[in-house]
Structures are given as structure tokens and as C-alpha cells.
Image 1: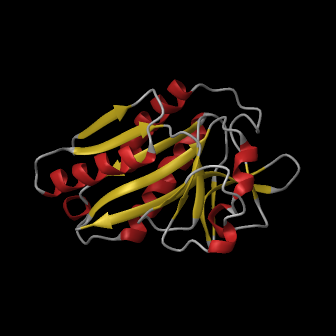
Image 2: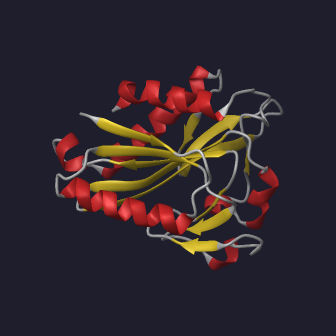
Length: 208
């Protein structure tokens, strides 16, 4: 199925991105727009998903946005690639299945990380994609949070290329305190945002 890819170079304010997604979802449902994947960055901010717990917000150093996506608190900021995925699941799946959709997003990320020799893994009971660091500890390198409206998806994924990891210290990321976060840079992997974008586009067709 045809996908329209949009890559925005300058950071996009969260409220502006949400308004674009809302309009796009309505247009996809009305067959006025093709399905879309939007790759972008946000200025530093925290978002609270529908399961967010107030105690997991440790600092208000950055703006906090309530959002309708699933999940808990997450951080977005420069050096992190956000991918907003807007698909008509009713058209794509014989029986619309949100769990399968999330599994597909996970596999897309895993395949993309493999291009850079990073082994991304799922963990039972923990949303997102995880890596085992050289010291044996586990850390999250990518987050997933989705919302579905009339079987059209929006929100999506984020992958840590080279963000300031200290900014995650203002929250308990996704409600998981016992494991940290990591990035390409933290793992010693040198890559540009443009190279990550190319890999995401190339690996898309392997899953979707």
C-alpha cells in the first residue's frame, strides 16, 4: 500500500505535531489522504500517556504534555528520531489487531537497529526495544506509544540517536525505574539522523 513519507528537519512543537496528526487521521479515514509516516524531532519535552502516574514525573524542567497515546511518561528532544505512523489498520489487516500492530512496530525498529549492528530485543512486560550494554545491564533505546481512532493509528515510535540522556532523569521512563536508557552514541555507534531515516524507510517494507 502506498505510503507518504515526510521528514521535517527543524524541531516541531508538540501541539503543532498533534494538530497535524489529528487532521491526517481524519483525512485517512475519509480516504482523502494516503497513509503517512512522519519523521521529526521535538524540542525537549515530556509527554504523559494514558497510564502515566504522577509520581513518575520527577522534574518539570521541560514542558509536560498530556496525550491520548498509550503508555506512561516519555521524553522527546533533539537527537531523538520520532516516527509518527498513521495507517488504516482496517484496510491493512483482515481483522484489526492492535497487538499485532505494536509487534510490527517493534520488528521495524529491531530491523532498523540491525542495520547499525545494534541488537534490539523485546522484553516480556516491558514496552519498547531494549539492548544489553557491554557491562551486562539492560537499557531502552526505543519507545513505542500508539493511539487508534476508528482503526487509524497515530503517535508511534522514538529512537535515541544522540539525545542528552540526562534529560530522561526528570521522569521514570515508561514507569520502569530499574533499567536505564541508552542511545546509538552511548553504545559507541556513529550514525547521522539522515542515515537512520534511510534505514527506517528501507526496513519498512520488510514488515509492513
